[in-house]
Length: 231
Image (cartoon, rainbow, N blue to C red; front, side, top):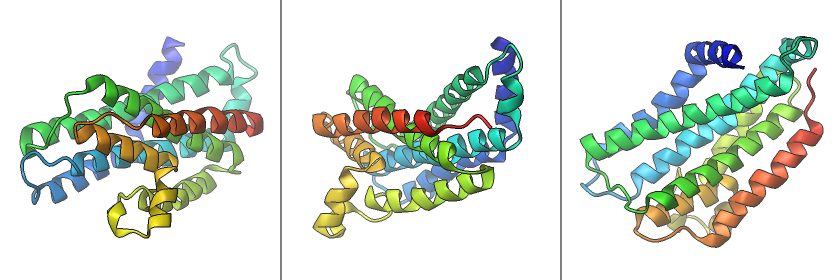
């Protein structure tokens, strides 16, 4: 298991998509952060949601579907290292990537841009874990249904932009039609983004939206497991 983790870590570090997932949210934060006032409570939550969304909807499905396309999962099923272990290692590494991306954003925003950092650490951690779980669940479903890595990549990107729009990451929710904003709030990325904004505003995350993220994580993961193919 340790050797598998080491090998997968090296492969992930060489993956251009991992660099992309780290740098794009940071680029957005720095570019838009140059015009924000000290203590801003909006830009950083938006950047965090973008970072987790990129890992969940781009990295997770593309990596797993590519492994299946290349027959890696099928070949591993004939070795003592079962393919299920590879799946667990990959999810843990993608979680580390998401944590790294968010940690980088928090460090730059807090030290360079002077953005507001919330006091409710436990609320931030809970929101992050549920939001990440819900986004990863969608990524797993894409990986389960996509015929190959290119298709998984395309589906992930195709889903990412509408979900980002509905979540208010491209246009403020208060400038969107009421029905669109309401629908967006109950998508995985929308619930995640809204809970982050609530925490950054000094409040507590909405219990209903936390439950929404938990429901997505559980239900979509079960569906993904039902349809996931090893070859």
